[in-house]
Structure formats: structure tokens, C-alpha cells
Image (cartoon, rainbow, N blue to C red; front, side, top):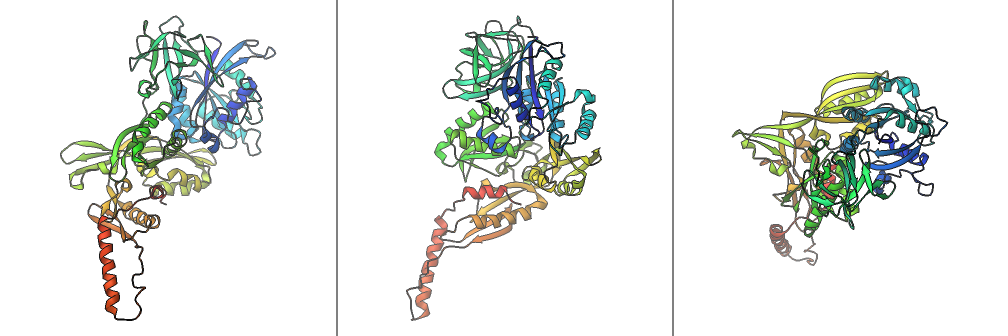
Length: 603
């Protein structure tokens, strides 16, 4: 056990985590030259296309410390378990899971950009779990690198010395062997007792259509052998360990795994409800006293309805979301129904990117065509009778005369940007009803601004706008900061007098009129013309605040009348008018999927 090192890589998005992981695998010969490719651990097409890591990946490397190194460990062999992590704020839950299974972390900072918001946020996660932090400055080969300034920022943040900071270029491989030596020397070996009862923390799981559910775990105490009878503590169900092994580029079976090891177990579990990330695996005959303190259960920030395009696919969609949840424990869902869209699920996501990725994965991995409703956040409503209820979607909002007070969630947002963009950034936050809390200059031209912002305002396009006004330099990180009273109204969209519940939203009272008007204008362009006039209205309660009309498609019924009396034409037009009136009473207006998506992209 003294020759095992478990570590993860944490950084802000795009600071070079996956590239550094590639180089570590190359230097340790874990991946042959033939198998080598960019972002070798990012196995989803989606990750390669977007250049982001969505899932954390675990892989084991064997490292022989060269005898010529000036090290106490020269000539020894080590087993290094690397867990690669995502960098985007929407996937911070994946990071917390990886951190729970490690003793050390490489904190990667881009030498051209310096410390950014997610760097700080992930660092705090690691420090809370008492991880040994190894600061690494990446991209030192670029012309725009500022090694001295960035080193000063790291020293201020960590309180380390300049000698503690390692410099490397993950692209060219410069400085990578020194990082491996630092992992061996600085990261503590796992603590644990091989003779104690088995305690293993489940930090991830995947669904395999042929072998059932494969769980990834880290053994804290005890020993696990093939063919043992094991049980999951929270579900109390027992299973036969058909196969256990370690995670290299492919899964490699082993006869036994001991305390400190990271590996996988296949035990023929078919139902996704039986495996929970953060659970503890132990033996049936000699169970451990208590479960391991895992990571806390995640709190979704953004809620949206996900409905199958074809209503017959409801059960298939449920099975697909359950399988996806195995792999992405931060996704929550519960059944709901809508008048416009039929049966579906109200899903909770960590942010808009997370929602987009889940929708994309449902389409690609499970071949499901889905419609997603307008995203919104959770509100607390105090009723006049003293009750307090949680509202997750606009249709659950009580009538205005029953509401005493509405509370909306606020976030504590940290924005780090160049001093040149401070004006536009503050204006953006003020426009979103933000309250400025603090300004702090990190260096002469980099500033940290702290705001309290309503989460509902941030959900839509805040991140995109922040990136565009700061030319991509601003970084953003947030955490939930309680609820505050607010003036919210339910904005409904009516088509020919019938509310379309999938398009209704909860919005701040001052924003209701402009949003209602824009929605009507947008829908007018998107709803196809019918044989009758379609009235699109935005309403708050019984008050109509905006209206547009989609003009009917008309046949020229008077074309065959030449000459003669006007009454002949009028008779034909009256007859047509009657028909249109009757059609309007029985006609249905189809809202295309593009209309639901366009509402999300309202400027």
C-alpha cells in the first residue's frame, strides 16, 4: 500500500487538464503510441467535439522512478491512480466525487490566463477534504505566458513557496517527468487496514447492456476478492462479485484488490435504482460498522420538463434517464404531465450547459427525441393560510389571491475579470438585479467582483453575455446563498385563448411586459399559418399584456365571379367566413419544437 498514490487533476475549464493527463499516460507507457490520441480519457464524442470534459475518468498507471533521480524513492515501482475531472462550473459535482477518492491533487493553472474562478472553487473543495495540493503552471511554452505574475498569484492563493510550483507544457511534454516525481514524493500513501472488514466507496458507475451495471470504487479498508459475496450498505442488497479489476485503458480483471486500490466490480446488477454513487460496499458475512462519509447529495439549480416527442416512448424515456443517472448522479427527475405535451419528467440540472449535455446524450446514446420546456428555478411560496410550499414549475404556482409572499433563490457569484471590463460586467450584473458586495484587486489588472444575484436571472444567458462583454476573459463561479422575498408573476402564453403550459414562465414583475411582447413576436414567426386566424397572447392572470396574430391562409373564393352584382361576391365571402369560424372552434394549433427552443434564446 505504501507504493500506491491516488490523485486527481483540478483546474478551470480549458487550462489543459486532459492534455496533461495524456502526457502522464504517455510518459508512464500506459497507452501505446498506436493507441495514443488527443484527449485519450474523454471517450464521449460530445467531449471531443466541444473540447470539454463532462465525466471524470479513472485510470491506473505504473511508474518506475529512474535510479539516477535524486529522490528517496529512486529505483522503486509505484502504482498511480489518476482521476481526471471536468472544469466547467456545471460539473463541479463530478469534481467533488473524484476528490473524495483521492489523497492528492494537481492544481493546474494556465500561465497565459492566471487563476480563474473555478480554480479557486475546486481548490476549496480539495482543501476541505485535506488533499495534498501540488501547484502546476501549464502552457509555459506560449509567447503570451506570464510565469512570474502567475507564480505570484499561486503563492498568494496557496501560501506556498516559489520552489513548490512546478512548470510544464502539457502539449510538448516539458516538465512532465518532474510532475510524476512530485506526485510520488508529496502525495501521501493511502491509509487503511487490509485486515479490517471491507469498506469501499462507490464514486461512479456505468451501464453495460451485456454485463449490467459496473461500479467504480476506491477501497478504504479491507480486501476484496473475486467470487466474494458483497452488499451495498444503503440498499442492503447482496451480490456475487463475478469480476473485479483495475481500470487501465480497458478494464483488467484481478483476483484481489486491497485497501488503497481503485477498481471496478461487475456483479450482474440490472436495476439502476440499486446503485447509488457515494454508497459503501462491504462483505455480507463480515460487514463494516458504518458507511463511509461520501459526498453530500447534490442540489439541482435549474429545473425543466423533458417530454418524449412521441407519447408512446414515455417508459423508454424513463429507462434512458435512469441509465443516464447512473453515470451522472447530479441529474434528478420525477414524473409530471402537461396539457400541451402529455406525460414527461421534471428534471433537475446543475446549470444550462448540464441541461444541454443531458439532452444531447439522450439523443445520441439512447436515440430518444425529446422536447425540453423553458428552464426555471425553485421558488418558495408562503400562502395566506400560513403554509409554505416549493414551486418547481409555473403550473404549480397558486392563484395570486392565495399568495402572501414569494421567495426566490439568490446566489453568491464570484467574477474574476481584467480591470478593462469592470464597467460592462458591473452593468450586466446590475441589469440582472444584482447587489454588489465586494471588489478586490488580485493584481494590478485583474479584479475579483462579488455579487448577490437572483438565480432565475442567471439561468438563461448570463454566462454567454459575460463571456462576450469580457472577450472571453471573465470567469464565473457561484454557490447558493439562501432565499429572498421577490415580486414574481406567472406569465402565460395563450393560443386562441388556451394556455400553453409548456411556454409559461415565472418572471420578475418589471420584466414581464418586455418578455411577453418578445415571446409573442417570436412565436408569430415560428407558428405555421393555419386556415384560421391564430391569436397569440401573453397574459398575467386575466390581464392581457401583449398580442400578435398569425394571419389565416385564405382561398380566393371570389375568383370565379366576373361581373354581376356585388351580392354574389358577398354571399361567397359570408359562406367562407362561417366555415372559418367553425374551423376555428375545432381546429388545433401545433406548436413546433423550434418554438420551445427559440423562447430559451430570447435576447
